[in-house]
Length: 276
Ligand SMILES: C[S@@+](CC[C@H](N)C(=O)[O-])C[C@H]1O[C@@H](n2cnc3c(N)ncnc32)[C@H](O)[C@@H]1O
Image 1 (cartoon, rainbow, N blue to C red):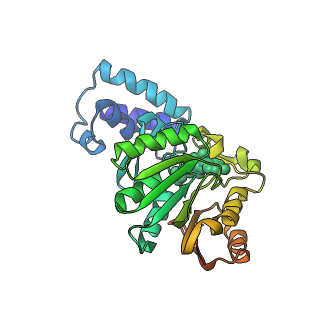
Image 2: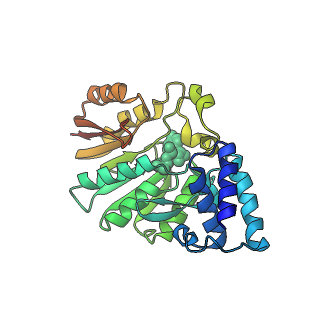
Image 3: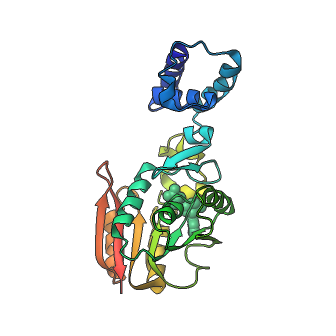
């Protein structure tokens, strides 16, 4: 087994896959139906052809840039295992930080929350598991994403507490909320050529706004005040270099308690503001 892992690691290095050994271990554990840590107890074991055959196919696809999470079919997010496939964007670790920050800011456990651009549902579903009394609405413009998000809500047993709705931003959303959270597409269409092979497996509707990149976030900043309860909060994940202009946009629209937070890599990634 150790030899297979080493050979796979070399193959991934040659194909410029980040964290090659970790990728190899994840795929082997997946094929064997084991936890990654369990591999360490069996390094000497010789793998059978029926174990190797499916691994070869997955290794080839990973080498071609298919995301690891698509090959595994799952992703870990905020301590839960979510289904993950090409119907929605692969959730990113930064977004886990957004959920943690929100958890520390929610005062009313019975909050009404809307997650705009829910994708695989990770934000809405994670918040539903943390705040059982909250009423949560998850919206997306993509039917595929909404189907996957609903599967995730059912899997994590919160389907009765998260409602799903197809909507362009808040267009079809009725009522007012204590929290509007959004990780919307924030990449400029001009930056398409700079993206890695892995990232280009995400649906285009999940990645790109328009020429600037921050158009959808700006539109939500303009829409949100009419659907926030007095003192309600808007929480946003944004792209690199977008904070200054978006902080100004929040101030221009008369939000208060405006603040930004960095992610663990030091990028100003999250904006928070209250209205009314
Ligand atoms: C960057 S992904 C984030 C997905 C998920 N919230 C996460 O953090 O992993 C953005 C999501 O916004 C959705 N989206 C794009 N344009 C939208 C719009 N105008 N209205 C609502 N959702 C939109 C996409 O379909 C995609 O699922």
